Image (cartoon, rainbow, N blue to C red; front, side, top):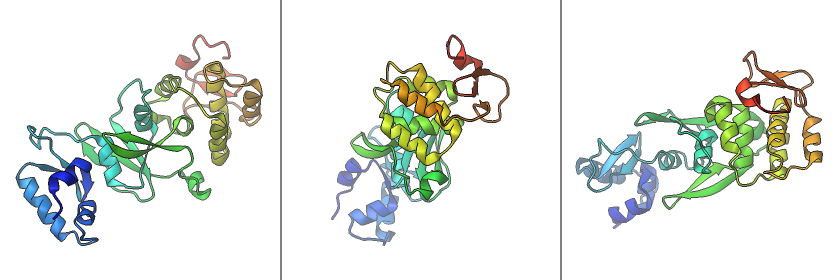
Length: 264
């Protein structure tokens, strides 16, 4: 007989099917659900979302307990990849905490609300799906002993320029990404090649030129990115108006990002 305490020690957040599998019931979740109901009544577990539960620490009430959102995201979608601002946070360089945690996965599900925040489940970018490169630039991290899939620095940088609103804005992205310990320039170029968007080549080049000494960026690499920039000025984020033109990269960026920068 599976000991519930042992299971919860290894799965502080779990899907009902995980418990059923651990009980040797396969796809039959009826017995697992009965066990969950018992522990819900005891205040030992808390329902997080449909067929998703969390162990409540001793001494806490289920009403006051908010489970770790990254563990919730991983339990909700076993194939999920934490991305955008969630990745920045998990990589240890975030300058602020976002209320939204994004997860890239093959099948959508309704957002999960946790306390004042939410977990959003998003489809993989179309370009990556077409190239079968959904895991390009993804790395594995551990949190509270549990494995997580997270977009690495290179992929997070590009995805952030692609969808600034999901990383808390351009300023948050640029300030946070400057804290990365290292960038694999070959991998970064591979990610850019899959997306095939001129504005992303330019954004990456603009960022790397600003931090060329920190990330040991050779001029020939910048020149290669410059050769793929947009032919006409491109506003970042897309759709905004006003800003400062970065001539080398044909990007019109918010003044806050260009202030004091000689390349503008």
